[in-house]
Structure formats: C-alpha cells, structure tokens
Length: 318
Length: 179
Image (spheres, rainbow over the protein chains, first blue to last red):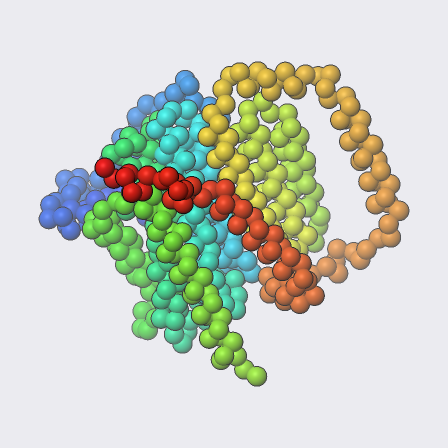
C-alpha cells in the first residue's frame, strides 16, 4: 500500500518543481482572464510552453554576482529560501498512505520552524546584495514575516486544540466528521492572511514593492538565482494552499473521487484564490500592513484560542 | 539505535561554535550561530525530545537570531569595523581564554566521570509534545507562571520605551500638526 520512501520523495519533488514552474504561466494566464486580456498565449497550445521558454531564457542569462556583494551569502540566500519551502512539504500528508513524514509527532511545529527559517533567505539576500533598495526590502521582509509568523502560529493553535495533536495526519483524520473551517473560521481567516504575508505575495508583497524599491530584496539577483526566488515564491503559494487544505479543509477526505485527487482539487482551487487576490486587491501601505497584523489579527487569534479552549472545556467528558 | 546522529550533530555544533568566535564579519558569525542552534535542535531530536528541538528552531533560530541579524543590518557595519574586529582577534589575545576554557573542560570531564551512569539509551523513549504539555501545566506550573511574568514585564517595558511620546506630550503637535 505504502510506496517506498525514495519514490515518494522523488515524485513529490518532481511534482512540486514542475508545478511551481507551470504556475508562473498559469498565474499570468489567469490574471489575463480576470483582467479581460489574453496573457501569454503564443508558445504551445494555449501558451502552456511559455514556462519552458522562460526557463530556457533564464538559464542562458548571464548569472552576475555584483562585485560589491558578499559572495558566499549571496549564493546561499536563494538556496535557503527554496530549501525551507521544499522541506515543509515533507510533513504534508497528501493521502493517508502518501506522505514523507506526515506522522511526525511535531509536524505542524516543523512547518512553523521552516517558515521561520525561510525569513533568512530574504533577509540575507538583501544584506548580501549590499545595496540600498535590497536592504530596505529585506528589512521590511524581516519585520513583516516575523510579525505574521506570530499570528500564523497562534491561529493554528485552535486546530491543534480540537485535534489534540501536532501530527498532520491526525489533524486530517480528526476532520472526518466536520471540516475545521467551520468551527475554526476565524483561525482559518487569520491563517490565510498570515500565509499570504509569509510568502510575501500580493497584496502583501511589500518586501518587493516595485513602485518604491526597484525589486526589493532580489534587486541585484539575475539568472537562475533570481529564478530560484521566483520558483520558491510559487512553491510557497502551493505550500500555504496545501497547509490550508490539510488544516482546515479536511485534507484528502471527500466523497467518490480518490483521496489524492481531492487533495489536488482543493489545493488548486486555493491556488486560484491566491491569484484572484493578486488580481483584485490593491497593495496596502507598509504601516497599514503592520497595524492590521498587531491591532486586528493578534487580538482575533487570541480570542479564537480562548473561545476554542472554553468550548472544548465545556464539552469535555466528565 | 546508534549514537551516530547525536555525534554528528554535536560535531557540527562544536565546529560552528568555533566559527562563530573567529569570524570578522558580524553577519557571518550570526549565521554560524544559527547553524549552532539548528544542530543543537538536532541533538535534542536525537536524544528523544522533538518538541524541544522544534521550539529551539522556532524561537532561537527563527525569531531571536533574525532580530540579531536585523539589528546588525541596521547598523551597517563597514570596513573599519571589520579591521577593528580583526585587531581584537590578534593571536596573543587567545591565550588566556583558551587556558581558562581548557581548565573548564577538564573540570567538566572530571565531574561527569564521577557521576553515576544513568540508564542506557535503549531505555529512553522519545517524549512527545503531549507529555511535555502535561508536565508543564502539572509539576512545573510555577516556573511557567514565573516565565510568563518575566515576559509580561519585558512586554510592558518594550511598550514604555517604544511609546510614541508626541501623542501624550503636552506641547504636542496634534492640534496644529495638520496645518
């Protein structure tokens, strides 16, 4: 029933990297649809080979390291960003029998730990670039990601309390009766916002903010190192969607269709939602972003924990 | 169950700790410190404490060290600071601390040898997050409460220092500021 571990790791990695590449085209096409224009539709059927064309182009670009940069850290930073996202997928259970470490008893904490490590990719990129815009971008990233990590951690605590476990597989199994999105609607909303801020996607892409910072933390990056940041961002979108599915939307559970297909369907629907957010919402100011976090999301997530705890205590047997 | 992961993580931790002390560039030293904390988390994991390992990464490597890096980035250290750091690290400076640390190591080894051996590693079971939680709010509830007092005090003082004084000042510009 369970496939051997190297096969699972290999297939997961291949699907993820393929998906992240494909998403670069898919997002632009979807944005085009919503904004009443075409988007990239020339290369291959429907433009699907655009991702391949972009990949080939980016591989043959000159990979330039600025002479004023800190070489070692400059090369390390995109790798950290990519690695932490990929490692987080290790604990996401796709189905009951298909996951790398879905039964790890500190699974959810591992995801939070890797998100915490992901900050270094962005921060070090900005520092190693040794240029003003990059530094400003990475300072924003550090403040934003650390702040939203707090709310992300607090918002999932409701789920942990209801499931009684940090194990991702147990959390999915605990949702066989009712998906956690119903009792934990508040936590789910906070987690979604924190997830967008954590992957610094639009509308919370202040670390990149091209109208004020050039390209933010990756201003000095070129070639495949920039490509790595780019892919890590899309892999991050898939990760946050997969986490939302696992924590709040019942994971692989669903009628009729096979479990893996349910997981894929739910995840891709959420990815489309992320793209829709980008198409629909303007970017807030930086202070507005921080105020939203500390003045609204923090009290809300604390309230969610207190209410969940109280209800669980009232319904506790004995 | 072998001790190999434990030994590997410890070696990485020790090597990275040496690198922390000997780096000229502050951010590099901090990065090696992150490596130390990550390998310590590995040591905890190898010893059967996954919860402590994850907290080590989330809190120390993920939050505290990011703030350190953040501050060092804000300071914008340049070549002069690097030269000064190198000057402080002149070879002669190492002798005293090395002797003292060596003495400490010898004393530590002697003390540890004198202690009776605890149960073997085969009887140790991993301690899951649930057990840790029950223990924290059972026998150790007093220390949890004391730690939360300390954190609250820290929070209040941070608020006091970071408070916007213009908003409460008597001669503030709030009345005329919008002109």
